[in-house]
Every structure is written in C-alpha cells, then in structure tokens.
Length: 403
Image (cartoon, rainbow, N blue to C red; front, side, top):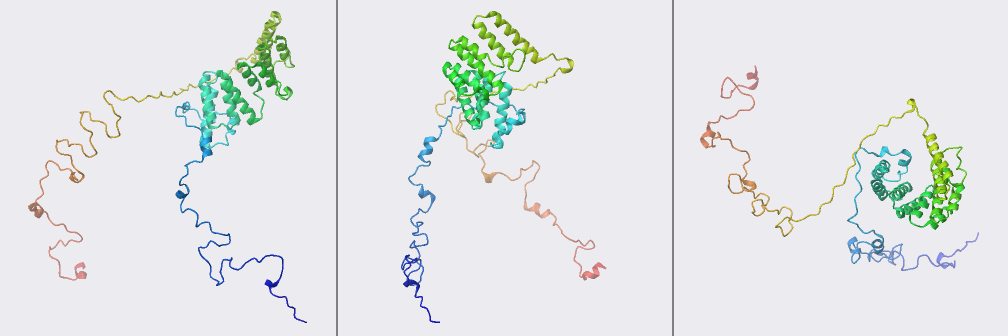
C-alpha cells in the first residue's frame, strides 16, 4: 500500500487562524515563561495597575455613594420614644392567628411588635390615644405587614386622624388585597369633607363580592355620604337592602336599624322612625339573650399599671459656673483645685504616698522592731527525719540503724 502524505498541520488551509501565533503565547521563542508582562490566558494582567489596598481605592471618594445620600432618611433626634410596655404583657397574649403573621420578622422584633399589638387591644376603648401610639410603634418595626398597617389605620380613625387612617388603610388594601376596611375608608373621606370621593370609592367595587357585614357597613357609610350632599331620599334608598329585615336578627342588624331610623327622622317621618328605633332595641335584647344563673359569666380582671415615660430634663448650668465641666474636673467642695488619682492627702496630714511607699502589711501596736540579736535567738528549723537519741548524726550504716 502506498504511503500517504498527509502533510504538516501548519501547511493546511483550514480557513481558521492559527490558535497560537508566534510571540503571543505564554512562552517565547526560547521556551521560557515570561513573567510580569501580563500576557496570561486572560489577556493583560490588570492586577499590576490595581491599587495595593482598599484604602487607596477609596482615596478621593466619599464614604457613601451619592444615591445612598439621596434615599437615606434624615435622622430625627426629637422623635418621640415608643410607649413603655408592662412586664406582665408577653407576646403569647396575642392571638395565635395574628402572631403567625409576624413570622417574617426576627424573633426579638416579632416579640416587641406582638406586645405593642396586645397593648392596642387593651387600650383601644379606655385610652385610644395611647393605643394609637402603640400601633404606630408596632408599624415602625413591622411596616410591611398588612395586619399592622390595618391596626394603625383603625386606631387613627378612632382618634379622628382621618388622613392618616385613609393612607394606612389604602396601604393595607394594597398589601393584602382585602376590601374589608372599605366602609371605614369611605367614612374617612366623609371626615375629610369629601363626600363625592366617598361615593366614588364605594361604587368602585362590586358589593356582591363583599362579606355580609362589610356590605351592611358600606351601605351605612354610603347613606351618610348622601346625607352630606343633601340627598336625603337617596340616603334612605342606600339602606334599603336585603339585610334590612326585622324578621331576622344578626350582629349587624341593630346598627342597620338605627341608621334607617335616623334617616327616616331626617325625612320627617317620626312615626316610622320610632318604630325602627324600637326594632333596634329589641334586636339588641335578642342578641344579648336572657341569661339565667347557669349562663352567667364571671370575668376576672387583672389590674396592670401602665408605665409612663419620664420627662426629659434640659441641662442647666449651676449658678456661678460659667464654663462646662469635664469628667474628673469637678471642683472640690472646699473650693480647692481638683485632685488627681493618687494625689489625695493622707488622713494623718502627711504627704500623699506613692505606689512604692504603701506598706505591704500593716503593723500592730505590740510589734517590736526587728534587729540582728532577735534573729540569732530564733531556733533553726529541721526538716525530714529527726534522730531523737542524739543530736549528732550516726556513723552506722542505714541498714543497721533500721534494725
């Protein structure tokens, strides 16, 4: 078989450039590796041009980027502190379902937020202002949780801050997608003097998709907005819904009956208005029931002392003191110069002692001074085994002495 000449690889014309052109590889023509030329596999070595340390890279630059300076919140040193919480209140006092929504927080933060929410539940009827402060404190720690923003909105509505309540409830609606607080939002628009926007907000959703209690409360709020506009007949029509049935009583029935009676009174129908007021009272009695002795509930109330923050006192200089004092530089009571450490005079009136002048052990009154004659009178101590028969050492071997 004839030998086939395939030729050298470099003589072929494959249409591709040579992968390793001469003089551009890591090794030169002599086969030695070039060092410090920056001609490695990744191209030129940029480490030679890089600064040696982190401090050099930051020379001439600000400590924080400009965009962080723009978005950073200004520090408010006059910001009020969070209201204190009694030690008896723990995070376990909060309902389990609400406590589960705080799982995204750290354990320490979730505990603090839960305790603030417990205080809101305890104070919302007795002290709404303090309850609102606790809600705001919880929102500062958990502002991205919808339930917390809802609590802030409801407490703000209770104390009459309708703008804040509307903003917080809109945020709650955006986070959770729930329309349960639509009646309160409509009433906040009324409180801000905007009945037109209240009606627009109430008509922006399908009432059939709302729960029954929310739908009834929305009808009451819409009726109030109609009254604000002077549309009394339309206000009565807003309340004429399927739930307005005196034959069946539910939790929402007393409020709905009273709203209907108030609207009839505005229209001048006193007889019908009195009838619906009576139905509202009978509905409350029916819901309360007629409890007997076996159905009585005994509630045990625990008194909890609410701590109060101490007022911050402003520092005022004393009389006759024109300059501020430094630490350790307070004047003496006798008017003398301030003393330094170790410079206090002795009780006997002598000069202050230094570290080396202090005696190691205090002497007693009956201790005599130590002299050379006294040292000679002291008997020498003997250690080890003592020969009682003679003071001189024996010349016998040790085995004979033992026998």
